[in-house]
Amino acid sequence: MIKKNLRFILSALAMFSMVMMATASISAAPVRFNQVSQIINAKPGKAKTGNYTQLRLLDDSIVAT
Image (tube, rainbow, N blue to C red; front, side, top):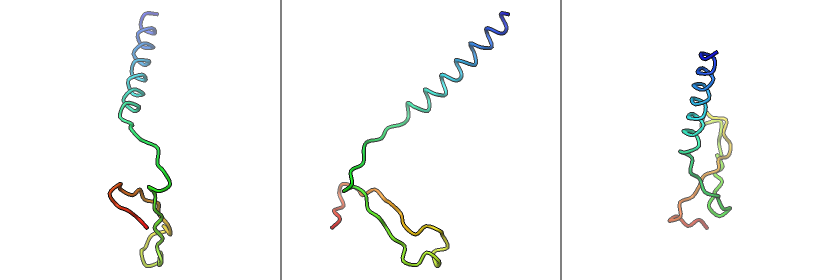
């Protein structure tokens, strides 16, 4: 009985610590539409990838017109 309780407590503590490690390192901010640019690959066959378009986040220092 004591062994089962200890096992339960240790497993709960391990799960709690994994959740805390995963959520403590996440830091993000909302992205505005003017911070995103769409890059279109004109020749996706020659690039040897299936990506035709990509979305990239612009730096604040770059001004896109």
